[in-house]
Image 1 (cartoon, rainbow, N blue to C red):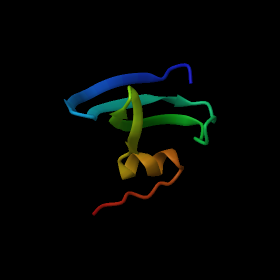
Image 2 (spheres, helix red, strand yellow):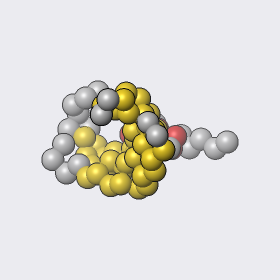
Image 3 (spheres, rainbow, N blue to C red):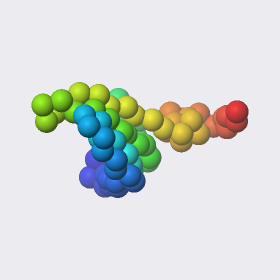
Image 4 (cartoon, one colour):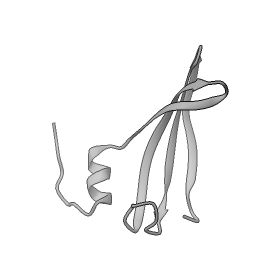
Length: 77
């Protein structure tokens, strides 16, 4: 993914918990189970132990995920 960009949105630390909210954008080449095309996703690295990340979460806005997966529906809650 040659045009992948990483942006740090926020970072907060408290004990073993370090929240690094990261945003990833670019164009998928079809590897890693993602379809070809643009993507915009975020991840949070949340807990460290002995200098290693041991917990993390990924999330996407529903509308962005549906577009990436080739769905044209717009979901509202």
